[in-house]
Length: 87
View 1 (cartoon, rainbow, N blue to C red):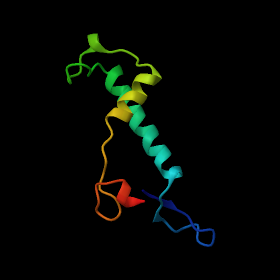
View 2: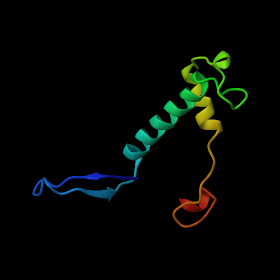
View 3: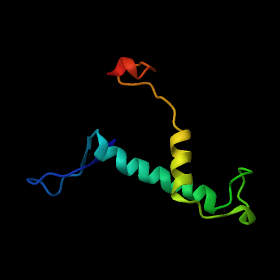
């Protein structure tokens, strides 16, 4: 993820830095969870089109299940689709 970077020596500087790790994955996952929740609260489920009569507030377990079951293995750092070869 690319994030804002600051410099103690130059407060006028505006730059970015590439960061990795769980501290970067957490805000991405939180944002995705918010979008999944909004999908349900805006009534997109089950038709895929916004319909106020279908709107409901999903339980946390529902949001978690959609995040987990909607995941897919991405190509890794070395262009592999196998998790075993990434270790």
